[in-house]
Length: 165
Image (cartoon, rainbow, N blue to C red):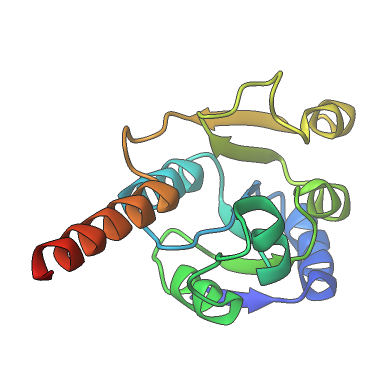
């Protein structure tokens, strides 16, 4: 059953997972307007270990990353939706624009990110290397992103308004 954990609770649970010899996989993102690319990435991440935790940017950090009009869905709802998905074991919120703080605190065995990153462009890569975390890059689903969905919705809404005039 998926849960929403505070960072402190996650740190405590991480110690128990380590003692039990279980492999922790961490992925993270904004997850605004959940789409098939997110779902496929989460399933791929879950296959990399025993337990999948998902870090979710809070609303303020999403605004910094995506712009003043984002997120469309507040953090509490994004976290609840993700926690309800079968491959997700827990969701952890964070306020930074990168997951470096989560990686340092939790030291997962595996870190999964979308293939729109490379080891050279991934901001957390120096920390991933320093901590000996295995990096897995999951290929993105072409033309599937929250930003693309939002652009498409705005375009269709604009066309509908134009047709009404």
